[in-house]
Image (cartoon, rainbow, N blue to C red; front, side, top):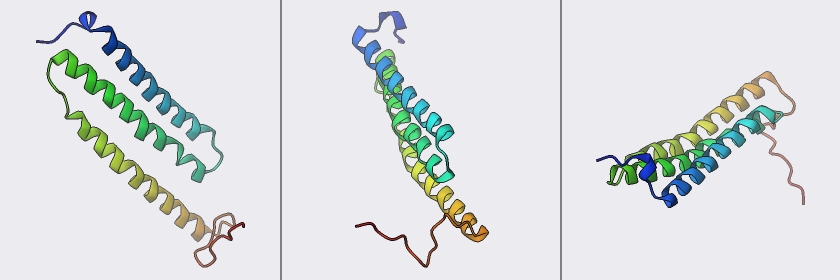
Length: 122
């Protein structure tokens, strides 16, 4: 039996709303960072915030809402969170390495070379 949304307890509505606002805010922050940061290497970090923490908060809101409405535990959405959490850093690393390889082969002077690691400031 599915519970009508109007019959949900206030605490559920408040927690689900807060989690949705948090998740969408983090996703928006990642999108704004993607648009505003100057270089590719700066920009690739911003969307990971939205896909990691933003999806996590939205996923928790969905789990809570559908568990209460359906009167049973809804946990299959955790798989979505696991897949997003595992694929986001891997995608980031692959994109960064491909861009680094491209920039090195083009001879971009702003990209560090493999032979000479950057000097550390003491």
